[in-house]
Length: 425
Image (cartoon, rainbow, N blue to C red; front, side, top):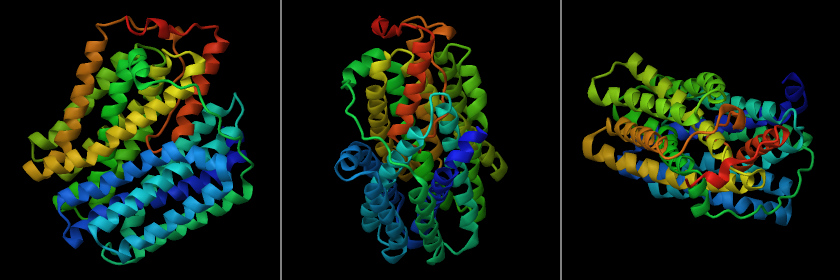
């Protein structure tokens, strides 16, 4: 891993700075929106718009790269991110924010795809898993650091919008000066959503529900915190706890994933997440309990993303895995668009506790569906499954495809025959 860090540190450092910018805007807008008097419903539209742009970016960026190249796309989208981060403060209007969130979501999606292409191209078969792990760690550290940055200024002013913009601009310097040319995007074998669902129903349903969970966490946590009157300090600690939990539990859950029926692990994690997030709905939780709930919520949702991707790959032929990755990203994106909108509607009906209720319901549905799928077919044995690769839901298409490549290589090395042909039994 030290070799990967030595060879790729400019790219990884740049991505961490980018994630600081992304993490700040995700939390800061919820706080500033309350200051400006925006309703919960209006803020849910603002937060949902990011995921709409992200979904469009994941579909359109490969074509843009093929047309004008990685460097131009990367620089153009980076400039857009930097500009939008400043423009939020200049146009405190929820409709304007919604349009800007579409732009910044599109831009971040394209930046992730481009940066992941460079990272993947710089990795060998032996180091690709380590590179993805470091990439995930730097993303999470960036978001966690962003929460600390929130405490350095007044959210009603300009400073907290300007500093992330500057950091994002700086982030591109080490990346563009050191990144080698990335390979051209190639069209993958098409795989219909129906076929993907037939191969892995739990993978599709789980990743869709998880899109709603993650977007509610990433987009609406600050809206909830402002609604219940948390200070900037307390809200930043709560949001940071979500990502600290995801970072700490990612590897123990990955270790378990490679040694047991992954559906049992999905069921246990989702059920645990449902019980944890139901606590603030049922009782008047103090701040320390809320932080613990946030850590458990993130500790479940972030590893579940990697787990569901790995589980889906268990039923894929190596040639189908890249196309399946694209399908999973799209399904997750559709779920993510609806997450803030549904959370905002529930909060408008029953108050701030609707934030936790929505997430608890999604976790409970996922647990129930995983339990039902366990009655439909036997699980592949542990020695027939691919390896678990840590991924962050904030990443892009190429990271998921790289995880599929690792699984395909492991499948080929072990001489395994993919069980996809029995997927509909």
